[in-house]
Amino acid sequence: MPMVLLKCDKDIPEREKHIYLKVDGEDTRDYLPVSNAQTIPGTLSERGCAFCGAKLVIGGVLKDTIQMIHGPIGCAYDTWHTKRYPTDNGHFNMKYVWSTDMKESHIVFGGDKRLEKSINEAFDEMPHIKRMFVYTTCPTALIGDDIKAVAKKVMSERKDVDIFCVECPGFSGVSQSKGHHVLNIGWVNEKVGTVEPEIKSPYTMNFIGDYNIQGDTQLLQQYWDRLGIQVIAHFTGNATYDDLRGMHKAGLNVVNCARSAGYIANELKKQYGIPRLDIDSWGFNYMAEGIRKICAFFGIEEKGEELIADEYAKWKPKLDWYKERLKGAKMAIWTGGPRLWHWTKAVEDDLGVQVVAMSSKFGHQEDFEKVIARGQSGTYYIDDGNELEFFEIIDLVKPDVIFTGPRVGELVKKLHIPYVNGHGYHNGPYMGFEGFVNLARDMYNAVHNPLLKLAATDLSGNVNVPVLRAAE
Amino acid sequence: MTTAKVDQLFGYVQERCLWQFFSRSWDRQENLDGILQTATDLLTGKAPARETPMEKLFYADAKIMVADFKERFPWIEQEGPAQIRALMHDLKDKLLEISVTKSLNQELRHSLY
Image 1 (cartoon, chains in turn yellow, blue):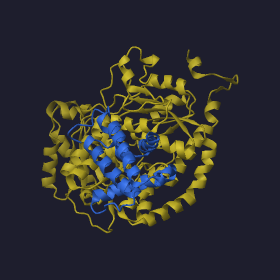
Image 2 (image 1 turned 60 degrees about the vertical axis):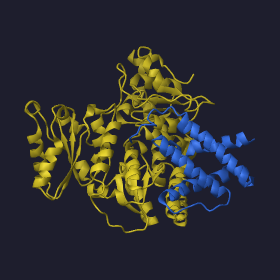
Image 3 (image 1 turned 180 degrees about the horizontal axis):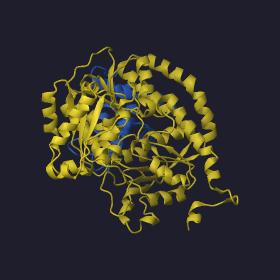
Image 4 (image 1 turned 180 degrees about the vertical axis):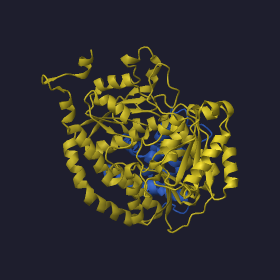
């Protein structure tokens, strides 16, 4: 049974290797979807590009860094403001976007000079900013612009600035996952170890793979402050460029998003001997477990138990209110990759919600090992899903709510199925104890909102018109 | 009966423990060796090593797992040291098989991260 060829995929039978239906008695020794593989011609992929993975997900989060995108203007606009990662310095990263705005003549005659001019202009316009990421894009990589040479020249002329180059054009990988990889490895090899942070606590860690989506980092920081743990660097939520240069000084690497940032945790272990501890930061049970593990590592278990007891007392009654009203709801998770395995047991255990289908845009087989081990039988596990597959899966599993991005969200809204933004959140933060109550509230409001049913009503005749039938 | 007990522990680890799914085969092997040995120490009343950073890491993961084992599977506290060692040995074999030797993950043995 296991691997599934959906009806809509009859002309692209290769898709069968990417869709798995879990059956009792099977495990990942028997079946594991193909993933992190090239999108099959004929399928309309929902994926992003490698450049987007580097810029939108990781680099663009930094709060004190110019993000210079060396390419046509669209590469800048399309990776700006589509995720909400605030900062405690006035959201510098979300207010501005920078591009070399390459035009045909620059492509023909080369863009090095234009890049140099743009870098200098940006630093001149923002004299209080001294740090910059420079990204190649598809056209500037193809014409061979040497962005590292340009950055080196500018740094030799402006002694107080530091520039990191990300050479990861959109075409360089099968999805945004490649961009995560290139940025992680480039950063650890070129920048980590170039700043010595001030150590203020016997307990130090990096918190890796949390991008302060709607304040996740800032919420969790309250826990670490209370425990007396110094976070040397958040990779990269609400972080500064120089925070990340000092990552080598942490005593522990705590990893949330192992997909986008597991690489740097692995390298920090290999190069600096810092152990890697993977945790889940979404969900009550998981968050408590993560705090317990961190505290056990540092030998401060009592402090951890006090924190957990206080947070449970404050937030658990609120969570239980939503659990009573969400029990039995059917949920689909169609996001990037890790949220599938972070969320499936968390919503099941903490909210009584059943996850019936999960789709990953850029997860690797490691992510499918995790989610199939944690997820239920009778649930669909999909790699690189496309729109027609989503329609067919909706018919098969009939979800009450879908956690996905705004583009797919608009699609399912037309079927009058509520969606919650699974990438940038509706009303986050979603991490931590308080955050999971926010997630429960948004799910409750989505599932029980009468608006979608009302929207299907033809006011002139007061007759419900199913969208698909109406379209025929 | 022993098989049923190992299956219960295995089910728990599959569902809860991210350390079995690290990026590469050698990381998974290292975690299995370190965490299951520390858990065995804790379950048999031996003080686990907590000197090096890696020993502290194994302790952090093992401590929470052992507490959950005791809560979810109360029978484990009735087992003697020899039975605990045998159970953990069989658990490790089973985990090693699913996460390393019979894993279908094609990135598991890539030499680079």
